[in-house]
Length: 438
Image (cartoon, rainbow, N blue to C red):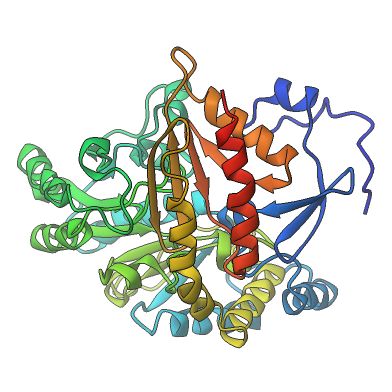
């Protein structure tokens, strides 16, 4: 692997990046192991974000690396249209076991964005298969992030992701977000105020009629918008209302799935049963791109009652890619063998204490924690939204810590294998960054 600086960075159009700023002051990572990256200058960078929320088991897990090496040499690619390979079926069974068999089937994608668009399409086709073709409306939520496909940005609610692209999918409405600084600032776990906001679904049903609504999709914990944690009772109430009106409930667990909440999924943490879950990221420990949609048995069975032939006209060239399947199978083994969920649950309180110790530092207007996630909200600089947090991001990297920022919110989501010493290092350095922030 080349660990030197590239001769030119002009040709790569980088995603979700201030390209001009980055290429003037690049931050280049060349290797990773455990809790740390190494940059092009040989410095160790503590990973406070599990890459991009996607490396729960830590970097370069030997079992996962070995599984990928073995599979790429044995079966570099096999299609799953009208044929298959054993690893895709083996993984599906293991994933059902990981959900404690609360779901019946899994449909493979290559990313969270594809998983979301897949779930939305399945929801629409499901109602049509049942003879309720009038159910075409999709309900998302303000400040929601569901990837970058047209389905995902349509049900999503982040203005910057929607504004450049004009008209979205028709027939989409949005629930209000639940973030309330006045009533819920500096909360640990689920905030007290706002569970009643789920009742806004009743207003939407009254406006459009339930017979027109196919699905509601929400992130159990909204991550990319800045760690917005659901108020007590909110998700259970959404479940009740969706059941009442025959609407499918989809949990977007691309971020919260695979241990981020210290449980297999957020559905386990909140004890709420969605009809479908979208996943990606931690599914392969970030090693190979892969996503998946988990569906309840009755959804799958509605398609199997159709006349013989292709039941769902949907899929991707790389759905169930053999190397990705090998990575995911190994990831599930690592979770079990290393008791990663148990470790995460055991260190969660120490994590929360460390995050909330930043209260009172300059510009910190809110801190929120749940599982091994944290959001630290900073007061914006007048006329320069996002500038203060971006300055914190740059300084933290210079000091050897990787954090993630969205707007003026610092979002933290470390690999679940972190130890107390890593927490101490992360927040020791972040404290100094915040103390000296303009």
